[in-house]
Each structure stands twice: as C-alpha cells, then as structure tokens.
Amino acid sequence: MTDTSPILAMPYIQPSQAQKHVTHNEALSLLDVIVQLAVLSADQSAPPSTAVEGDRYLVAPNGQAAWAGQDGKIAAFVDAGWHFTTPLTGWIAQVLDTGSEVKFDGAAWAAKTYSNLPGLGIGASFDGYNRLVVSSEAVLLNHAGGGHQLKINKDTQGDTASLVFQTGYGGRAEMGIAGSDDFALKVSADGSNWVEALRVDAATGRISAGVAGWREMLTGPRSYFVDPSMGFDGNDGMSAGANAFATIAKAVDAALLVDSGGHDIIVHLADGIYALPQSLAIRRGLVGGGRLIIQGDLADPQTVVIAAVDRVIEVSDGTVLLRAVKVQNTSATSAVYVQAQGHLMVDQVTFGNAGGHLEVDGARLSLEGPCGIEGDAGFHLCLVGGARYDTNGYSVSLTETPDFQDAFCICTETSVARLSGQSFTGSATGKQYDLASNGVINSGGAVLPGDIAGTVQTGGQHL
Image (cartoon, rainbow, N blue to C red; front, side):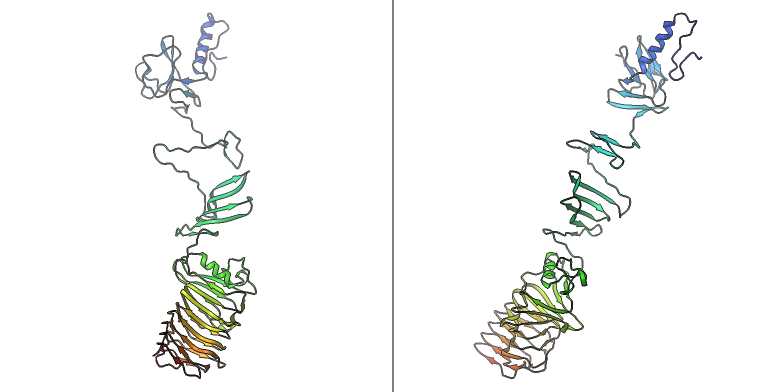
C-alpha cells in the first residue's frame, strides 16, 4: 500500500505511525482547500495584502512575490501563509468576483464552454428535434455594445430557413426562405392549409402577392388565357386549356389587379362564341401603363366571336387593343362604345350585325390593322363630343353588302375623323356620312361606303 492517495496525494495514516493526527489533519487541510472550490479571483498575479484565513485564489500567469513560480495553482491563505495546490485536468472552480465558472485544461484555467451539447432546455425539456427549448414569458437577445443579428442558416437553396408562429402548436404564419431563396410570408387558419400572402424575388427585389391589398409588379408582358369550354374562373388563367379562365371578364379583372410596370397584358381568347351576359366594361386603365390586348385567333379571326344583346365592350379609361375577333349584338345600341379617357385600337376586327358598330364619345379610336364589315348596322362609325378617329391608312373590306340605316359615318360636335389614306373594298347601302355641329371628316379623297351621298349641316366639313 502506498503512503498517499492516487488522485489527490493525500497522506495515509500508517499502522505504526506516531502522531497520527498530523497526517489526518494534513489530508483534511487539502480537502478543505479543493472541495466546493470557489475562489475570490482568477486574474491576480500577486498576492493581496489584505488576505484573511481561508481566502483562495487562482494564480494568474507571471506570479509575483509569494506567488512567484505558482502560475495556475490554487493559492490558499492558511495559518498566516500561502499554501499552493496543483490542480488536476478537469477541475472546475467558481470565480466569485466575475460570477463565472472556469475549468483547468491541464495547462491553464479557462472559462467553461458549453459546446456540442446534445440539447438545452430552459424551463422545459429539449428533444431530438427541438434541441433548444425555452419556456419563458419573453426572450431577450441583447446587443454587446453595438448592433445584434439573429442568423438562421440553411444548407441548400431547396431547404428551409424560416420563422414559424403557432397557436396551440399549430402553424399560423411563416416567414423566411423556404424551398428557394425568395423571401416569402404565408399564413394558415388551421396549420394545414397555407396561403402565400407576399413574396420578394431574391434576384430582383420585386414584390408579388396573391391576395388583395398588394399588387404584383410585372417585369415583362403577361398573358392570360380564356377558354369558355375548358376553362374555369377559379384558375389562375396563366396557361391555355384546362387552366384557362372561362370568361373574358375574369381575365380583364386579373389584368387590372397587377401593376403592369409599363408592359402589355394580353388576354388570349380560344376559338368559340363568347355570349356575354353583360357588357365588358373597362372603366380604368392598367396600373403602371401599357396596353390591355384582347386577342382572338390571328390566323383566322372569324373563329372567335364576341356576341351580346346590348354592348359588347365599353372602354372608359386606358388603352385597349381589340384584335382578331368578330363582334356583334342584337339590340339598337352600339356594339363597341368608347368614352371619357378611353383609347380603343382595333386590328383585324370583323363587325357583324349590330345596332351600331363603333361609337366614340369624346375619346379616341384608331385602326392598328385592316378590319372587315359583314353585318348591317345603324352606323359603322359615330363620333360625338369632340371624339377623334384615325385610320392610320389601314384598309376596310366589306362583304355581303352591309346596310347602314343612318349613315356609314356620323361625325358631330367638333369631332374629327381622319380617313386620309384609307381604302375600302366591297360595297354597302345607305348614306355615306352625316356631318353636323362642326364635325370634320378628312377622307383625303376616299369615297366612303354607301349608295347615298353624304350630308353636311351646321358647320360640318368634309375634306
């Protein structure tokens, strides 16, 4: 049997030893120093002048005076003198002046670290998935003299880095980058069905939203699709066929909900007959500018027919291009009506039977391509209230000899019809024009359709 213990080297009492109390007391003195080790300080290199019996310190590097050569040891003031104990690797001490805990690593004392822990629970228990759990009324993440960042990192773009807000452990809102690097905010009423309310594109910073109150801003032209036989107005209308809208009105509403960013929005109409239950009223232009284009079949415009009892379309504001369709109605009203701040452009439009084809009140109408007339009407063109009409030199072809009960062109109240350069093919019956109240027709020598000469009254001019 050895004379000392294997770990703390405390002396054993020997069987034949005299004054056994000396050995016993020496062992107790060592235990008195190291058990429940709490030192007054760990950053002093020189002994204090005011030490009292039982004071303990950890000697800082470069020990001086009575502590010279004792770096890292435990200095205890016992019997009016300093006694030193060499620590073993792994010993832990509480440092009272800093309220910290230090650990001896075999060479020096260092603040105890909490690394690679399996988990941490504060006021609660952690589990294998929630490695950090805090049960508290509040959590404060404070700065350390400046700013403060909370970082949530993910491995790849397809992973998730987000904050989830819950009610009864069921998700109600989530914000972050989930499945991509776009920042998104989504909400849920039940924790199962989620609705994305906001998305910020990581590359451009553009904001898009799927709910009212926010407008998506386009970075390029947008297309919506309408198919009366296959579509459904609950779709997003972003592709043809089964994902298309069922009605033109729904597509127009979708276009007016976004910020076009100055780009055109095209509503593509599948072949078929669109029997409108009410007039397609466009009372404001696209937010952000650009044209709203309602477009049928460019290869065969006759295959897309928009029909109504009263007016087919009314444009009160914004720029609308009606292209590659046939329009007609069954009442005495005009099929197409433009007023106020509206500007309607027509291209490859065929006009069937109608109370009137084109009526413009104080607004603008222009041809952007050749058009056709094959149905009877009270008039083909009626301009009132200072309206403006430009043909831009495009031709109009007439088939089946349409009849105009009032006149082919009615122009009154300082309205101006610029027909110079336009050509007509085919024939029609009825009066060619009716000019009154300072209306002006500039035909550039072209003869308007009709078999009855036009009339001019009260300041009207035919040039």
